Image: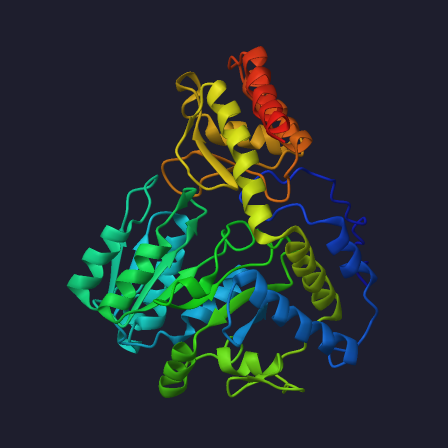
Length: 415
């Protein structure tokens, strides 16, 4: 009999997750995850936690939409659910300005393609009823771009990323919503990077009927917990009329498990999937943290600390091309152009988790998810400057340190 090899126990070291996400999960959230009892998924405390989660999530998202809950899984689970209402033959305008809105566009083309179009190219279907508006990398989708496209194509659906993580650009959700209202399109928004980071209420954008986010970025709640989603009554009515070709990510069936039936919160939901007591407990604590800190306060903190990081990397000779308050996307100094991947791998080897962009042009991405302190930003700046020097680059450390001191000293003086 062949002996089966036993692998040694896996030990993953502590790292500073200074990329676009996942972020470093708060110790309180990790504790709730680890300390949850082995309750079955229908235990009264688990069900109570789910009720409180959906109520807190509505406050975090700024909505009265009853169909607001969490989809078990990652952000892609939430996005797949949101796009599930798109049916073969539906006309869609998709706005793309980075890697992830590009994948959203592929998702839409797969869902809107006919059986014949899928058979012709199942992994990259080409369909005339989906119009992809490509905005150059490093630029934002503006209200004017959306207006022109919707006026020309008159789609049933329009879709856009709120904050594009691939390029670090904030897109004009107000202009998007307004254009959708004017032209009778139902807006769908990928809020994976903005929820829990930006100060906005989704009910302020009536042209948007579907929102999807993720657990591991602004909410900072372990990658495999719940992806927040929210749908308007009009979205749900449309879905009821057309149906959808998914069971697992069916918005109405999943809502029923969260005690949302026929547009109302009810005392007891119906079975759709096996929920995890661990995940419910962690998600509950992450939402509590968001509301304790306050969405406006969190947003202001992100903007403040991102500005410090931005100023420091520019003092190192880097060019910042992003405008997201949780992520800096940059070009290295000219003398180091082309060495982005080498620098990123060098940083990762030292448990400093920064990222490259995932599509051309290759840039460096440094994030600050759940790293909102002077000490954390100083650590990131110090590590990044040293990495540039390790690869033979030049950094005037005294200048960088002066920029950092000035930023935080000014804040102290203002208080």
